[in-house]
Length: 117
Image (cartoon, rainbow, N blue to C red; front, side):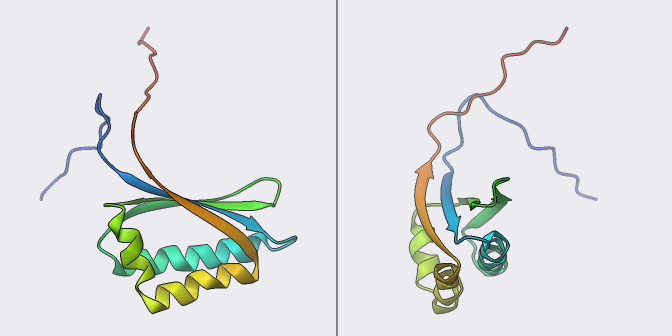
């Protein structure tokens, strides 16, 4: 049985690319917007090698949904948008929201400076 070691933080950040997609739901449409982006992310997770992980969250005020997604590199964005099924799924967001996304590369990793008592 092959047991992998647990994940650990390092002093310097691993060069990871993130997509941060902020989805501004139309009034009363947060659940629908969440379902649409959830479908998009699951599609990518099942089919695209560049996908690493995603966190989907709904704001407590009912106004936004956020997708924070780690991918292997900025080129993966072009790969995803070259897939017509992905594009059709992603465009469904326009029916229930407006959205914007940006691509980020990790520049710093900040960890707690607490010491054990």
